[in-house]
Image 1 (cartoon, rainbow, N blue to C red):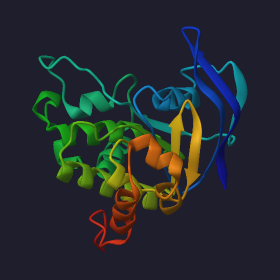
Image 2: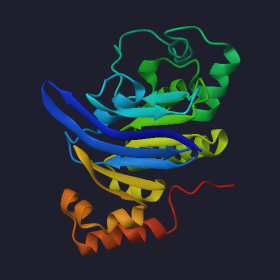
Image 3: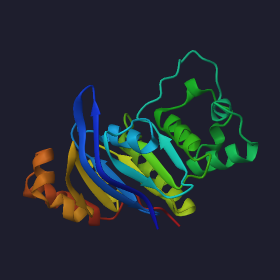
Length: 240
């Protein structure tokens, strides 16, 4: 089932064209990752999908009634502000207790419900933001570099949780990431963006494309390493 269809999208900021002629479809249940250099328009594309930015041209068609959950690149909170996880989950509007409990469980932070936000580790805080995005059981979960600042184990744990969420909700996941090895392991499709879409397809196809190699300065040996990493025993594997 198609959740999202973008066609001929152009978007300018400050008089400069940031996105040009973007075409992208997203199906329910798939994980699609957008990669590209800094300033390539990745976050801008996500913000256009959630409606925070309005394109100058083109259309974004969404499935009727589609619910979007969004985890931003970063959320700045005053470290001295006394606030528990449960209270943060009730902002900006109160939610039924069972919805909050379900979201925290899906994000894997049930035990942190009464913890102060200032006491959370980076990985725990990212999972709390994930829980907020899951409050409405979204059809589409959007992650903007949600593992930024986490160590390798923290990233692995976070992506395992995303896979569990995908399996439980049957939602689509659209994410931005700079972690190329994780992208190749965790994604069904990869989209290379540098103002316009340079290449897109399965991880294997994209890793072998000259556009992808040129974008990240990879050679044949690097691309082969990414391919082997994709087919090695997955460290994102979910235990039964």
